[in-house]
Image 1 (cartoon, rainbow, N blue to C red):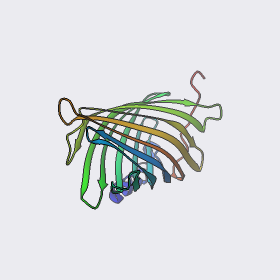
Image 2: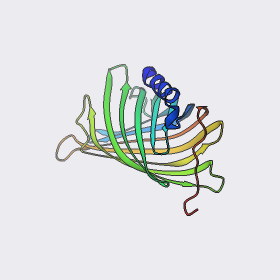
Image 3: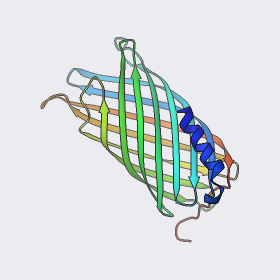
Image 4: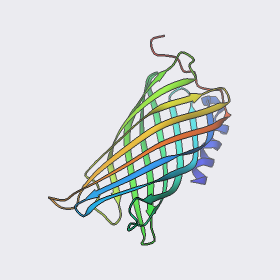
Length: 222
């Protein structure tokens, strides 16, 4: 992850002809993880912290790298807490001033005293972006489907999708954002025993623009 973040900064520094912008942020938020099987219902919740790096090349190509983690405590005293670690890299292509298409590759782990459950997640989706009159503040809505999800220890989900909505601030020097995220997974543990999982989070980030000028955001219709 450190190498990937370093590569993003290096590309931005070495690509002035592409009008590169790069920013780095710290993030924090709360998360909830729910699992429902034939055996019962489990709920875990806690805080997440992490780092985020954003790289933009020109007006259409972008790279976002996020690493975050935290401890999710179980509601039941019988279930052990889980330590979550999550890293993802998202490549974005702006198809229109208000629409971006993206693909994401990510790794996730849930660790307990018993062992670690590992996830690999591949995503494809789109963002709809609606700038406010100031230009620096933008409302963002995201939808994704996950064609490939691999998990260790349990069956792979057969249906997976996610969505997010929030606000982003891209100023001359300051970048910030607030986003609500939801992911849902369904895996068959048997024909009459579907396994359902849901992960939700509210995350905020604040950081600095390290190189390049702020991207020009104009409200649609102008």
